[in-house]
Length: 383
Image (cartoon, rainbow, N blue to C red; front, top):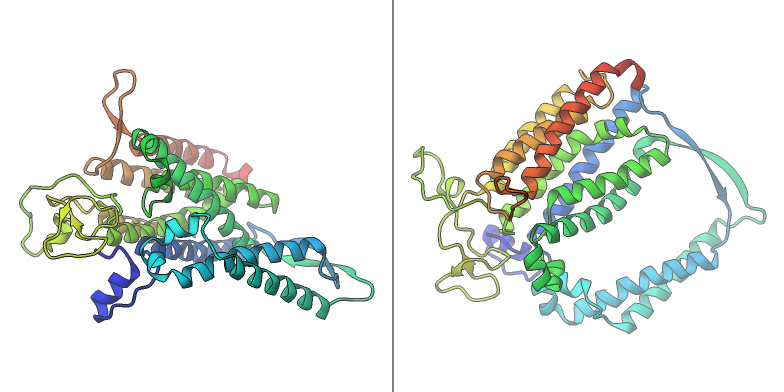
């Protein structure tokens, strides 16, 4: 396993370079890059087909830097400098606990003031270069794909909060006992929490820019499937706890690698299992028994499902149908993975025990069926 990027580089090239980056975080970032690409391609395609349209926006040229601009840029620079200089001067601590350091109040005031002042001065000089004696208002054309940066930022913020909130609800007893540890942990993210909260933010912003919710949902279907697959690579490589149940069954095919059938997740980032003989350092545990590597299964399945969704996108004309199909496929995939995955189960009203993901995936399938039927019946009225 590769809990940090340093472990990955050492495995590939045999070099020990202590970088303060977690493998899981790297692949979360790559998941956003993959989603950004897929979303942008779909927005461009739908605009070319006349389904989505550019819009006009008024901007004022030649304004000098306002007091508010200087304060915001100075504050942004202060936060970066406050953390950056502290990370540099406490490098080993940062390399081992980057997420704890970033989310703590620890920092370097001198670094914050220096970079805050630099950012404010830079904004002042840049605005003065284009300052006009009489500022003028002009109208510019904005294409749908050009709002992607704004969408990604809000999707990341709301998705992160949603993933943490749903994780806390899923493991409520542990969250109550160790709230700070769960909030600051490198793992502990619930996909559906991120999907629901991040998706709501994207729909809200898209609607403000004139993109109908059903069209935005269709844009997002393939991209979310791809982003999920990329993110799950990080779950597997880091060993973040999203693995399967113990798998003592004999391997069905001799050509199948052991790690693809039953895996102990050595050096996992959550420190689960028993100590590894001869290992020193922070990440020195492995599971006592091999488990189903469910994150890897989801990577393979979701890449195939993404390829399928991407291949049929030109054939789907009814608004909402693409996202309905995505909901069905995603729900079915996650429901069956839950059958062999370790998870916290709910006991409600005498019903058979079920996990949070099983409940949400069932609702996704039912919702996807309803949305697909609705889209097909009203395709002429929803365009």
